[in-house]
Image 1 (cartoon, rainbow, N blue to C red):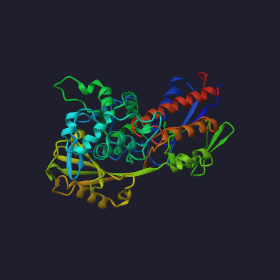
Image 2 (image 1 turned 30 degrees about the vertical axis):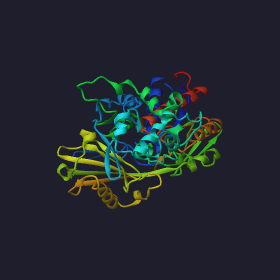
Image 3 (image 1 turned 135 degrees about the vertical axis):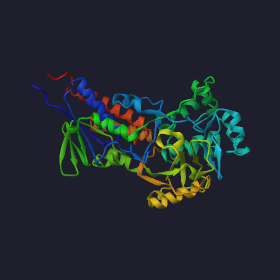
Image 4 (image 1 turned 60 degrees about the vertical axis):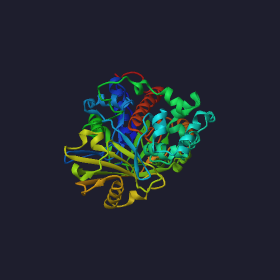
Length: 480
């Protein structure tokens, strides 16, 4: 007689939840485990921020447009679902920083804004002479206090000075998190910079010494591959490919979880339609605000209430190529906060991703909204588009209206890893382990905001679930 199946409920159908469902289903099949999986998603589609618009020959991402090729968990998952032949590298090209109404080339040899070659840094018009001299203090300054978390702003200002931070580092780093670098945690966003400083003392020398050999490759006739990958058919097609591998009976869309209660060795999950489902183990692949609401009667989730999230929007503009004059030789630019601009960055998508745009057309993708400046996201599509076009016309000449514009709003969608994030999360997870055994968290609010980071967390959550079920003596051997 078959054992009663263990019920695992995954809440949230973004990439972390999809990954969890996929790898849990795979393990259950391969190991013949008595596990029943249910994936619950509040909206009527899976994939979360992975949304692609295919229109008039354009492939336009509403959310993220790519991922770092060195983060291999996404490539591995793409192979598993038969999508690896759709992967394509970005075209490499110059990138710029918009400071004081001018586009400045990113200094050669800078890694995330940190100079590793003196020549390009000294000759760059991005910084004044006093700014360059202040950055040189990095060679003599002592290390940070060991093990202490601090904001990215505090760390980089101390080492390189305000000017390098505001004209180069801040536009690059805050763009990744849509955050305020004077609030963001160094240890939770870029701990590698802290480690380089601890090891080498000087950040500049340390980055130079620890830069992988690929930066110093012998000259080759082949064009170097870009550091990013995406899918020719768009990131949404990746989410759909994962969903297609799941048992349709295991997916519950359009159902929101209102409350979760622990009863004896099980969990009662109350849905917004009045239905209750039961689980032996739960993966909450939900944003921190949602997780806190679902577990609102458990006090240890309270700190999630004070974790901020910023709102951003992307604006994709399609033009005939003759509409854009003063073309730049590059793939895009980021914007210094010091200027009078609403856009925070602009990607020349047709140059970065050749597959995204039909011949004879141009695709510009601009970003608006950041910590402390989010009201723009609430404006109408037409208002946002006009603001973006006005900003673009300060650096280039656009002579026609766009063929079309696609505005994508992401309200409260960018979790901010503020100073102390790691410690806060560890404290919450310790309580969860003690009070809610078998409950695990995964997603952008917790251990990394990038798509591969969410995949890593989904995989880790599956391993935790399997270990937990094994520990309860349920999923020991294949059931006969």
